[in-house]
Image 1 (tube, rainbow over the protein chains, first blue to last red):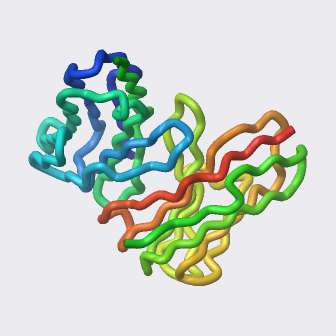
Image 2 (image 1 turned 135 degrees about the vertical axis):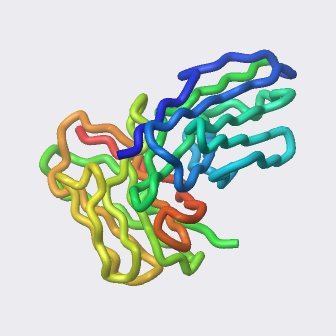
Image 3 (image 1 turned 120 degrees about the vertical axis):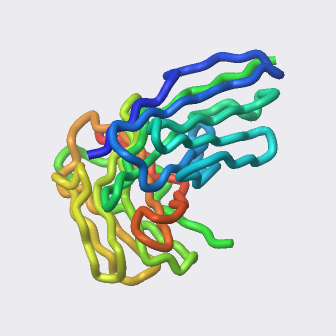
Length: 108
Length: 113
């Protein structure tokens, strides 16, 4: 089944810096989703992005199917961006598989 | 928009106890999921249900039972709580199975003494 490698495991940034989070998948993608989780909070879907590039404010998600990877770019990070970012994917007909998550800490 | 509610928010149990977690959604979604989130291990699927009265095992179903009583609700039972167990249980729903965005509830935090 699908396996997901997420990197980095944790990331510390000063406010204003950009962040690049990566997910690599072991098999071909059928669907792909990025989530955000505030400490102690629920998961919020950021992008449903099985292919191509999508933008939402300071966030950009790019999925390259043939390379089996997806990235999440956060520009001009803010302290409120701190939390855990999770990617998840399925291969055809299989269950959604989550990465381990990237813990992001943005300080002033 | 819709909302997913999970009860209780915090659950403290004793070793060997049977504990039930509840989830309700008003999206009118067909598919619902239960995940377990442990620190450093991401989310793992316990059970899912494609429609009312349907039940499918996930990767972590041993030690759990589930029940989809109606389209809007999905319950999870820990059949025998393990001592020192600590995890967050997340309920989610989507229109279809794994083809659509999944929406998550706030979670139930479990601690077993």
